[in-house]
Length: 166
Length: 430
Image (cartoon, rainbow over the protein chains, first blue to last red):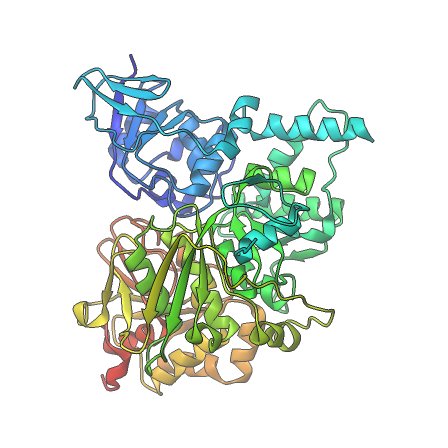
């Protein structure tokens, strides 16, 4: 059962997730080292491999506000973390879906660190508190991209289809 | 069917006559902008073509603009190498709207796009930068996207799966009092809406105050619309838009002004009278933590920043010089000035502003994003306080999570530089 590895408040910015001073680093293989770099303790446990893969970040509303930097999504994906937030900022949400990051919008979610969360279709179940929270569907415009496994394969399919028509 | 500007623009770009809010469309892109993060876009672009046997060529090199601004000149070997890769790509793909690091052209992307006449009313503009919202000031639907999404645009020429956004109408009336500027208006709007109040929506600015506003002032409003979460800000284009394009952007071909229908349906109406508005300050660590200047007056500051895509234009520098009025920057305060582009730099040089900044003790830096994003050119020390005309005050933004950032207008920044503490520019003296 996945556990909550970090609980965050509202309006977590991309500067918090991936500070601007590391923006020259772009490769998804390299961005994970700077994940939440200014939250030194959490960053250290991530780098030490002490945070289990599939661990859950629980956040308040407007997670990922601010910059369009895609590193904010790739850095979290690199640690294979799942995000359950009350809501997401637009560009971050799109970047995360485009890269195939695992995330869920649950507007009422409540959880503490160490809680066991089960994401089951349209509900998030907090097995520790016994509470259950509704999941809001992702923007419909993005579902086709999720179904294709991310924006790169989705675009590739389009490109090949177009070339075939010529 | 009555439509907002964005509905009209997306309908045209999607080859439709009418379009409903919430529909999913695939608009043709008129202009696709990137900066140094083009290095990542290139990686993703090349990956799209992997295994397809199709040659990786951008859909239309004339519709792509790449401007180096975030880290100029390069602050590290890593950045310098990324910039090299972008130069190679630009040459190989035949992208002519490329602005490298040089003193006779270029600057911050959101200043270069309008001043070069790349942006026109009615266009669909995407950029790998959240402040791409700026270009709504010229009546374009302009929004930020990530690098992978840009790679997809480069390949296909369309923005995939765009949901037609709802629009909040912001109706502004009244005249600004002296010392109160468009920056104060947008900070006030963000304070009212909150950092997420306009998420997935567009802010469409109307009213007599907006009609009287220069394109420079409109750029301030649209630039910071994203700080309320908005997909974009937009101003209905008018005679001022036409004047700007003709006189300042050198556009001579016909310009069509796409405006909203009188009966367009809005999600929300926000009415603001600027006549009683005081200078506004966004306090740490969120942009919506906005207070009138009198509530934070007297706060000790260490670094004053004038510049950025928000407030680095000629009128911003002129206002700062006017408020400085020949006085000196206070002891133990450093004042950094970043003109938004090399054109602005040259105009400020010719007008004598740069000499006046230097005489005051300010440091005039090269055009670019400067310290706004916390990479170089003015990091904060532990516990230091910056007062800045930039657009974000998130913890760590200026290179140090132990620093504090307050956001304000150029007038407040200049008055505070002299005082050494946050000061009200309407009060004149020290």
